[in-house]
Length: 90
Image (cartoon, rainbow, N blue to C red; front, side, top):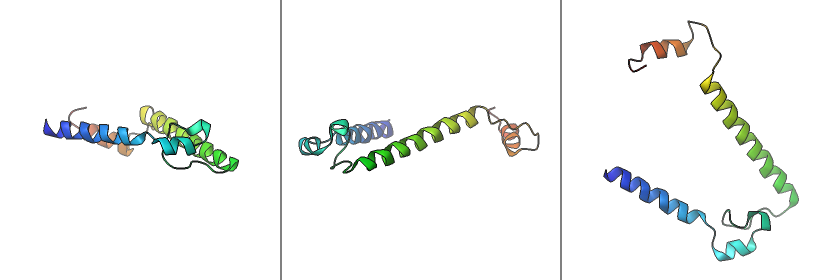
């Protein structure tokens, strides 16, 4: 039980620190004012870089979930079949 309390305390402390202070809010562009600390993007080209990074992360998330749910490998010699067959709880 102590582990869960400590974990929740650390989680809530990190969430509180994620909100920007008043000075950082004032220095951020309008689009990113309530997101993070610091100055934010300085040029318009940096928004394209951020957008590209977000796109890569989203595609990675989508494909990782897709291939975890339905990997498509049907060969009986595939390693996933050896692992799944040897696991007693499945």
